[in-house]
Length: 210
Image (cartoon, rainbow, N blue to C red; front, side):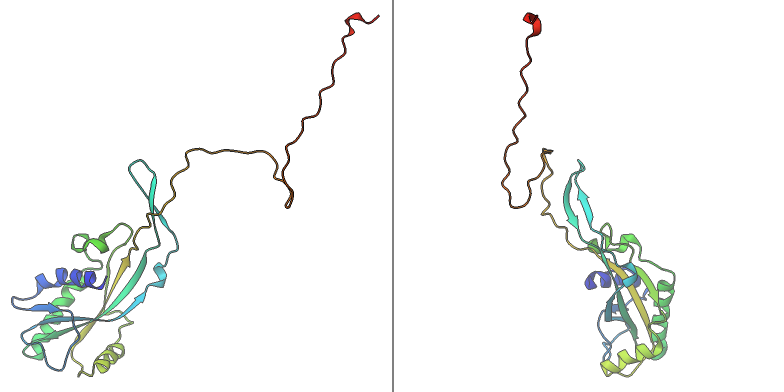
């Protein structure tokens, strides 16, 4: 899922970057990677409890028969630190500004940019939240501190995407016949016995009676 989300971001941001600027998915380091471009680092993943589901889905063939069942889709929030590297701070801020212009106008990734796993039925949209309140300045400073790297201009980004579980194909075959038994069940511990029909009394022939 993480590689698929990275591929989505690359497809969205790379065309907007200037010639020669790349997009790498790694944490910032003390020594810059050289050249100029953007970096995206996933530092936290959590389930989105607001989208939690417990429903299973029946998957049917062309005749309407259930051929597999799929468990609930779980949606996750991927927290990114979006940083820039370049010859000077002004150039780095320009690169971040380009990313802001693209991301701010894209509340959800276009479906044509989604790779197969994220484009499956039931996965839902891949939503984008740029600089959400949960990724405040203090939270991002904690990330820089954990990496033991001096803080630099950056953006907080959250992608919310659905993870579709594999389908379970161990589905019982449909019933071919239904038998209905109306006989009463025996009491526990008793052996069922065949019920005897009551004898039908023989009718008298009254034709020869006086």
